[in-house]
Image 1: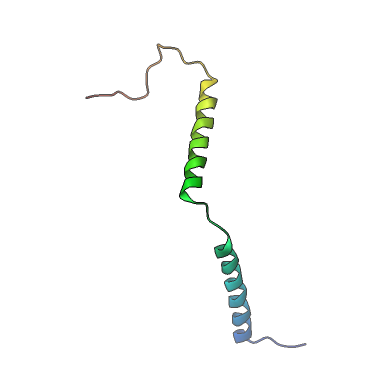
Image 2: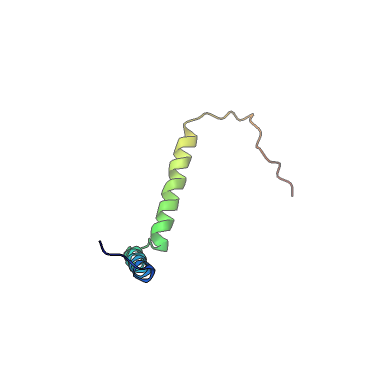
Length: 67
């Protein structure tokens, strides 16, 4: 049975961490345009969900608008 020294263990762990971070960096991050499109789609979906519930005209807003 071969013993592994602390230095060898640290080197092996750091190599694994470096390769994992390289893989993470290699993944393409979404561009600002993609994020904007996703945000707009989410807003549309939320508005569609809210449109399913009737709201009477007598309902008061949660806030009071003051000039």
